[in-house]
Length: 201
Image (tube, rainbow, N blue to C red; front, side):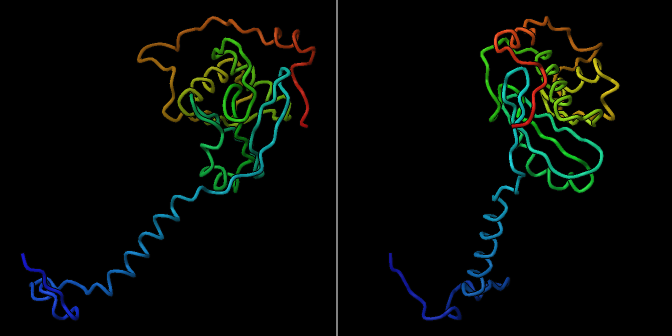
């Protein structure tokens, strides 16, 4: 097989095709710009400084931003509050946004307990009390949707609106199955000697 080199783009055999191929000199800057845009798209959006609050003797971390009506973003199973990073900024322009790492997830404490939906509902209730949030819109994704739905059923006076994003826990017919409550948050209190609602560090 014989190789041939060309001295300029004008000698390139593809130049003779009916669909004029741009010269390599034009393609390189275009490719560089496209790669730069793709790399920039992978940079995570800025996220507010992380805060923490003590609930049932456990440290629960969260992000807070904005002013206005209260809005709480409740993440799903195997996730954490930072999953909402791209949403916190835009939402904080109109709402006072809270995005907690639920107990057992993210940077929050991970006590060895039997986690149930009721566990997360109790912690969400304590979270709102500790931060003096009388009422909020809940946005729940996946397991967070199930928790938000159950919280709304138990505390309707504390929920302004409910937004379910691909929520778990819903059946085609009827309400979600009732789960036994194996965790009594007061058992955490007895072992730690603290009150349910703590203060920010």
